[in-house]
Image (tube, rainbow, N blue to C red):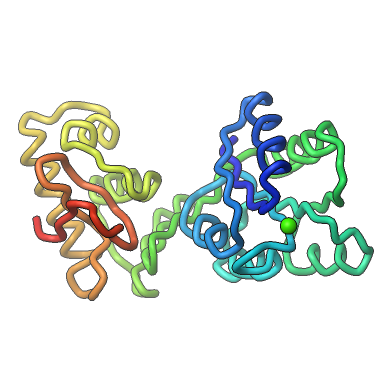
Length: 234
Ligand code: CA
């Protein structure tokens, strides 16, 4: 499982990460609430483990942002605030389970396994990059709330890019991963589909999400990090 851990106490974050790694899970550990909120609302995870008292943004605010965007990823709250009121508050805001500190690692693993069982271990079907939303269940795509109509190939390409935001893929990689086969003229084919996607997804919007990385390939991401050699033009 792909787990997001938002916990500011480094020692606990390290212990939990190691225990989850040992149990076969991959973990993204984030020490701040604001950064955790961005990760939780833009990247797909199977489970989110969330501390309540966090620097930047409070854990409850992070939880509200997640549920406010209809992201149904199970959330396990992990906090020293063990009072009954806090527990009910967290569950009211959409948390799936609650574990007061201090806790035994076996207990945490048991709760995580219970959440995986309960939810079937599926990723949230909703992928988001900024205001671009893709629903893998209905295969619908929206940009700024407006429905975008895509062909099967355009959808496949966009879905793959959105599953790996910020990762740069070569044309050959895109061909192999998206269409499972090498097309006759794969370089040209990928360029053609990227162009069509841009027309439908980016053209009418000030923020361009599909990025060309010169002499490498393509990626999709919300904001271009400074210092990266990324061009928005094809
Ligand atoms: Ca804390």
